[in-house]
Amino acid sequence: MLQRVKGGLIVSCQALPDEPLHSSFIMSKMALAAAQGGAKGIRANTKEDIIEIKKEVDLPVIGIVKRDYDDSKVFITATLKEINELLESGCEMIAMDATTRKRPNQIILRDLVEYVRKQNPHVQLMADISTVEEAAQAEKIGFDCISTTLHGYTEETSGQKLYDNDFEFLKMILNHVHLPVIAEGNVMTPEMYKRCMELGAYASVVGGAITRPKEITQRFVSEIKHNIL
Image 1 (cartoon, one colour):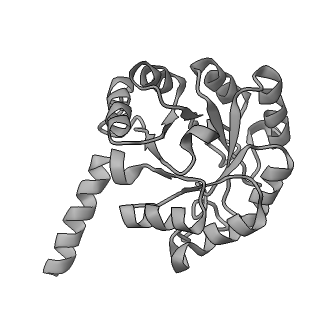
Image 2 (cartoon, rainbow, N blue to C red):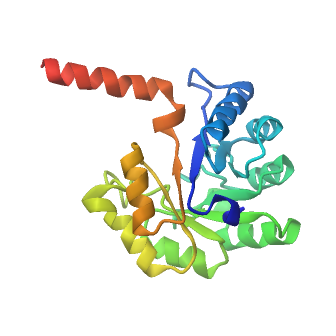
């Protein structure tokens, strides 16, 4: 998969149950629109959405399953249950939370990596990280690529943005690991996407700025309200 998305745009097509576009059918059409627009890959949530997306597009898919657990703050592909669902989905890559936070039932991240390698060595693995240390650890335990997805979304990095100080965090990751680094997290404009690529990102994932019309509308409305006030 990595070779197919190199230098390109990966569009995240996701809608959670409380969102207006929550539907595997709608997400498949969103992926089709992204493909027609030139996307090189898709990031999608749930086995059901991935199966429908793969009926519509011939693009590689990064699969995740978001699920909440009472004993952990990790919710992106947290356990073997999610891993097995993604292996059944046919996605080319599985992304999982690779932070140092405690996983449900004390599951060890390295064990999940080894499990995927044994079940299907052709499926690649993306580490969603929030810090430089987590990126280095993910490289050591055998991930295929690093994504900046969770920077700003953990207690340690709360409030931080990927684009702060001209994407300083992205630069740090690029300087600390040898794996391909995917820029993801609040990449909101074509100019920001272009800057990530200029800095050396292998590819970039863009989600809300393309596939979440509710949030896009809110940004327009809030800008007008701000100017009026």
